[in-house]
Image (cartoon, rainbow over all chains, first blue to last red; front, side, top):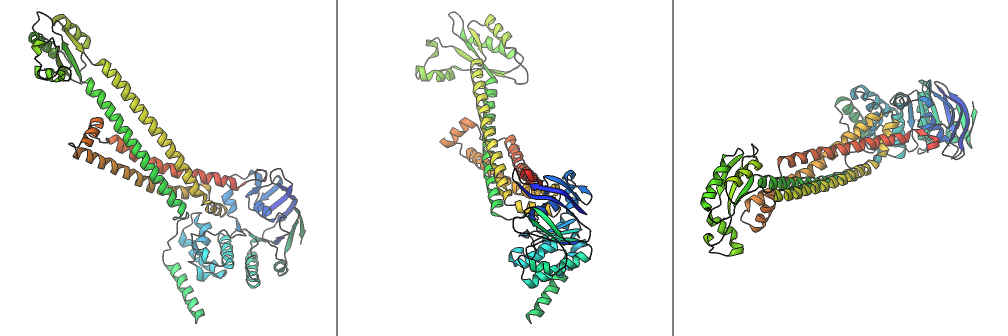
Length: 219
Length: 325
């Protein structure tokens, strides 16, 4: 599904922040991505998400060599990946319903055809009571779950989540993890970037540990 | 109790959402300080550009009017010569000129009018028979047919002693030069005004777009195509641009109408007389109004285009090689 071969990333003329990464994300797999701050987690997520091109090496995403993907191909490939940003990136002028429906709206999908899915998804993440609320009045945890719902509405093949439990209390974090596991069981590959060792201990999954740009994999 | 109420509310919201038609907010935020400021800036620039355009068309129309007025008339002058009867000479010249193709009418400037013309230099109560004063004939030209000046001039000098034809060439040349300079100057001012309008609108739009970078990024990352994002912003900014430029342009048109009405309703007023002496009826022609309408749409299109290009530029910076960051 996603394959990295000797991938390296360097910003400008600086040192490499990611070095010799070689691994594969299989269909239906679940993995945690961890490591100290500045280890390159966000850069790696950007590589997954095709918003950053590597300095060297090969990345194959859904059968496409990332170096040859054109600007026109990018949106359709990106729709196969759901991403939960660390800072949520909800649009404050849209309601929760509209934020969650956004990926389908921009694809030109008829609203009636996805209305039930959006409402179901909001129920699933426990936000069905806040359907018409604007993000600014939501708590950090609620915004986090809304961002998760938005990432999932397009039924992506891969879910990338950057510190998805950073704003949640342990109980909510556990609940969100259960959502991810449930999603994974339905066939979606999941990559969760986190510092939260407690979260990782709750679920037995492959761990990618980044340190000084190099990756160690614990299956 | 609160729990039950929450559940009821939730069910009602869900049922309502599932049953009725949901109204979506615009993807581009509608109300922001930057958007309002942009509309105001566009309105001001559209007003100034429209006023400049109106003034330039007014001045150029007036300058063209001077040219055409003076070129529609020529003068025959008959100098008094001893032994030649002035009245006979005037009649002969009138007949010769009236026969010519391209002449509409020939009028002899009578003694009274001639005396009045000379009054500032020779004083009142002038008897023209006591002085060798030249007499004039005003020849009004028919604009449709060209008058052969050379043939008329030679026929007059052959048949009427002391007659000469003045086609106002010297004055006309000066006026043409002055009018051309006025028109060129006016258009230069208009071009400068347009350049400053374009720059102001472009930078104000880019400023307003800066606050929307987050929206562009989110749309891009949820899989929106570049054309879709650009289209959303283009539509939004076209409306903003139209609002501003319509307000400014319409205000300018109202100003033209009000000033025109004031000038024509105060014909006896010295100030209005002065304006009328310079600009005739002070009416901005159809060209001026059409120009303002074109200006309104050009400014709105410029705003939309700038937002489109800003989206393309920003999206271009989102997906790039690490070496370029």
